[in-house]
Amino acid sequence: MLVPELRLLLATGFCGAYTISSAFANESVALIQTGQVLAGVGNILATNALCLLAVLLGLAVGSRF
Image (cartoon, rainbow, N blue to C red; front, side, top):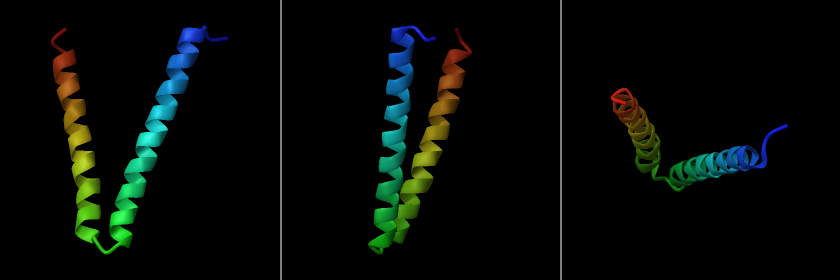
């Protein structure tokens, strides 16, 4: 059984990640459905590229400690 603090952390992290992912997908699809295909695809590509860059930056900073 998980300690209450860890349980809260995991639940909050899961719910937060789920809502962010849902909002991202909803916004991208809405753009594409309204005919703004370039903006929708650009949103998908830019978001993923920035996320990968953030991971690389985090790994670089983390490796220094």
